[in-house]
Image (cartoon, rainbow, N blue to C red; front, top):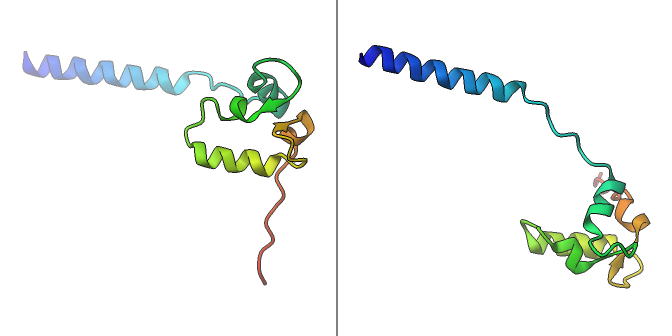
Length: 92
């Protein structure tokens, strides 16, 4: 009885693992889609509060907001939000 129960448990676990591996992956959102999602009030710009909402690391997100807000108006335009970050120069 113990062997049968153990076997069934292993079989069930392997079936769950197999189905989980076959599950389709959620496609990543484009920067434009992320902008539309973050712009909660649909005013065409993202406030700091909208940007920080749902953040796991508020300090890191606040720094990212400051880096993206090029004109320092307290909002991110679509252009500021979707702009690729500048690459850091390596010291020679």
